[in-house]
Length: 296
Length: 166
Image 1 (tube, one colour):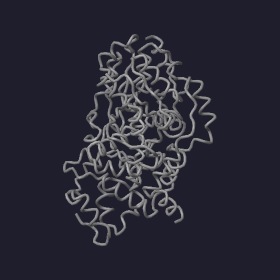
Image 2 (cartoon, rainbow over the protein chains, first blue to last red):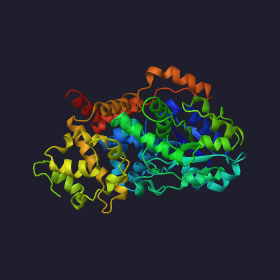
Image 3 (spheres, rainbow over the protein chains, first blue to last red):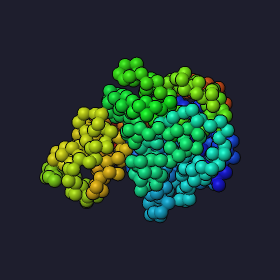
Image 4 (cartoon, each protein chain N blue to C red):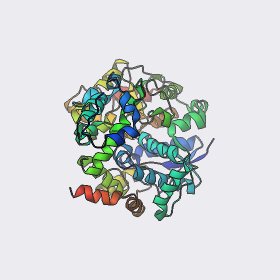
């Protein structure tokens, strides 16, 4: 088991969702894994805006980030699907292609960094499942969440394209469900499970479209008796929290379905309080959910 | 499937993505596309086959920017056609020619000037107050100088100036 990782926090978590950064540090440290935040990291960079429009810039900036971890002798752990997508694409392209690696290194040479092609990038779910192991996660559970039915949303960019991401089945993902079941909770079997959260529609499409999507998805979770939902990506989190809050004020039914980052749920099962996992920062709060947590 | 004879870049596109010609327009991709379901004017089939390949300047079609690159269409396509690859190639061309929407240009500008994917510096003190409350170290500036050096090398820096002056 790797005991120390370079913690690639990305942009969204440290800026808008610091409670998730704090809970990640705490949970992994309690599991015997230390996460080292390196100040030299920049934006991964974001795949849909930067990545598509300038491939060379995308690869080069990503390579610089990989080099920063490599210089510190560490592999990378991420808490965001987008960061994982970018960095894994870069690893895939660079770790096996010397010609491209040389070209990219030439591009970043003025920064004083050089990437040698040795870094491995893991999303924290992969670390929990493959490195720490489901058994050890189960052993860490002191207060099973047996009262809860939880809808899981793995998100798009951790699953696809599957030949690059190599994580789970894009149309029938089960890993997050397994990790929810290990906490003692029941994963909700709901329709539209692999539908996007709608975050990028907010930026590149229309808000109305994104809100309708959100309403349909939350409605299906509610039909499956979910008490809350869980995500593994900060953009999905923001969409289901802030997005749900705004949408329920004007265009969709009030579902009041709290969203928890998977590490927050794990924290609750390990015995942290709602305050300790940063629930006070959430926009969507539900007393019925809170009382089930206090009963655990 | 008809490919526009007027579209100048089509040979380049076809050479790079030969599977384009295999598309049967079976519409399986549209069934799993979140954008098709919730927005007007986009489906991988229509935007990519109908609209894109029968138009003389498909890169000008504003609907290509609705694609969220979730890759669901390419995962489900029975013929491995990979629509996002082509839509992304068109976006790259559109960006180069200055047709990208402002949101995209601004985002790239943010990454180049702040090292973050969205604007934060107007509210840094608020963010750091939140972080301190959670026991986290305050955020500082990112290595923007190094990003600038890379952008100069890749040509993105000058591309941004060109795009903005249009």
